[in-house]
Length: 121
Image (cartoon, one colour):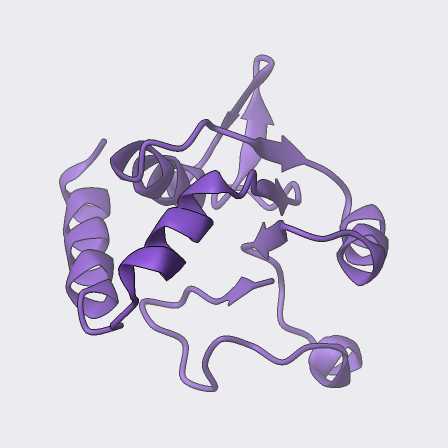
């Protein structure tokens, strides 16, 4: 993991510490198996010789690792990911293009994107 990625993770952790959850909520969240989807969007996320990589993938993997969660990141096309997000539970999608045609489709985690990241669940 690069220095920049490490700094981003540390900033995300500091922000997450401000969110107050009960022990019950934390235990419940630990039991959820989250499937994480992303699209081919080099250099952010892409397949290189059969391995999913890119700087956003590194950040998400490190978050999963620090939470003791398995790497469940799947590379899918945007259309398939969007259809799955509409009908399946416990899915997240990261690092996609924000274009005018998609604006009304989502409620983002933040109008202001933290470190240019938004996670859509």
